[in-house]
Amino acid sequence: MRNHFVPQHYLDGFTNPATAMIKVYPKGNTATFEASTTNVGLEKGYYTDEAEKYLTEEIEERGNPVLDKIRQGNSISSSDKRALSEYISALIKRGPWGKKFFQERAPIVSEELIRHFRGEGNRRARTNPSRASHYDKRVREIESFLVAVQDDPPREVWESTFAPDTTPRLIDALDSMTWVLLVRRQSVFLTNDNPVFLPGIGLGKRKSEFSFPISSNVVLWGSWRTDLNEGYLEAEKNIIIQLNRRIGATVIRHLFAGFEQEWISRIMTKVVNFKPLQIPKWCSRRVSESYDFGTDT
Image (cartoon, rainbow, N blue to C red; front, top):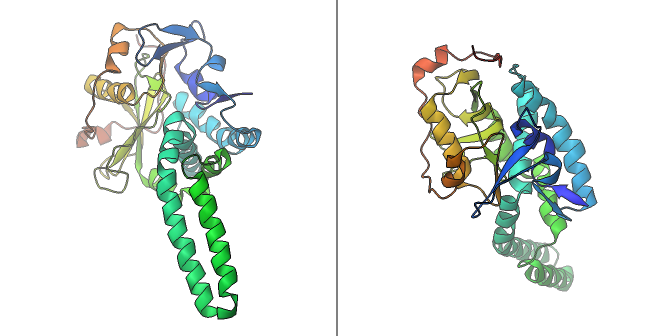
């Protein structure tokens, strides 16, 4: 079974309206191509059937209507914001970057779990000395298992992290930030197979932010700014450039666009140092809850 690690409905927001096709820019390769969204952002046997079903029914079916609302320029509710926060969290973990990050973290997590179970075994042995040998045996069995799988953790363990309750702090942070939807009537925004931009400083600091392209016309930008209202804001040229450079710098395999420009291939070779988006305070007066995506005249 072929599994989309970048959801097809998400990619549909970046197709060329005239052809319903998406332009694909492979990383490290100048041979671009057009494809249907049914045939990109996927890999055969990437998930188990259970994970595919969970992502479709529990994450995407709640997140897709919110994506559609934003793509239509409509306002979103607090429950919509929560659903999209959970969607974004799962998108971070399910893609190639998230999978690689999980595999690299597995030995560290394994050692943390070993220390935890050793401490728990010792605690129980002190509380119930007659069962000390039993606890010691169980701890050694757990240690043996964790050591055996730490370099190649079972896929099901990674898939279990997709559930929102495995990263509540991440979702709470996303949900609590100020969301501004940066828009242009023309198709100007790009996406990739690792579309959620999170700076290395995390989300807990005052200058923390994230960006997430919703379509060729809209990017979601979240920050801890309290001087901005939530809603839609026309994106200036320098902001568009900065957002697209983030996408170019974080590609794992492919960059996607609804249009073709020579500069798109080049931005994947540029190193981008994180700089918060410079949205001036006076822009808060221009933010509106909804946006008209009508054609420019």
